[in-house]
Length: 385
Ligand SMILES: [Zn+2]
Image (cartoon, rainbow, N blue to C red):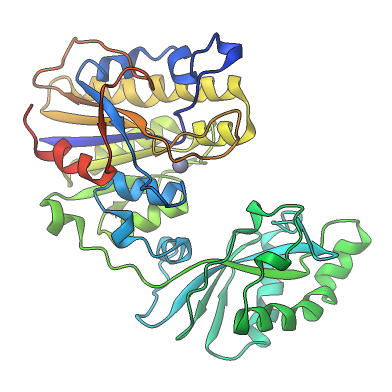
């Protein structure tokens, strides 16, 4: 038996007036998803109550790992995605360059400064902090920090406090001291002098967040007796995959957006299945459309996923023993432009018994609710229904 998990990030939504009280999943033409829904359908809660509805948390559940037990923060997963090892006593943080003016978070991305600019500023961070602090340049404003023997402090992500006064959100102690100490060095750096002259937002502060220690996932192969591979353009997904012992596939032209190389992703998945039991295809585009609040784009992203991914996988599966799990990780409702923790629809299709059947894949069609998302995976792998 081979297994596919087809993940349409953020595709779940709420009924919309402009769609005649239908959700985008209901409204979109998704004949292939509806074929999958000819199997077993239900709703699943991937974000445990009390946790943030973040993609990494939700996808961890889908992979069969209880986030309450295994989630230690976002930064350790990003480090893993970049193959940077984190030691037992160290703490990883995301380090954004941000623009703070008059104690207000003006820009969580420092005007999307370039990677080249960012690299120069990261060098300043490394030169002016002690050796237990190591900063790693990433893409643009998205950098990382390893703090040897550091503390885990929960800090609000900068994109959640846009235009707000920063005082209530500042950390205390050493983290704050380092932020303050680096501020004049950043403000007066040639990179920022140039940006100021051009009227661009300056990278005048660092904002440390997403902190956590190294997570200790039992390998997927030990936990579920299956091997797996990940096809995703998104760092966090690749990070989780590495940490649970999945093979991570590279696909040229995988962008994390609607113009992604769908065919390349599906072909990489088929290739991976020559060696592994399960392949996870993650498509980010519906989530991006949700964040933009663009309903037409979201419908188009869902229809492309249906046609370019689900149909190809169904065609491939007709003459083989295959099970498919289709689902989003969390809703990204158009009206909210951000994630929620509500349950999402799922469908499980089995080539041995569900060929030619038809159902509906949307937020209203599933009756059973799986309250603890991480319990769905063992059912998908092992339960004979
Ligand atoms: Zn997501």
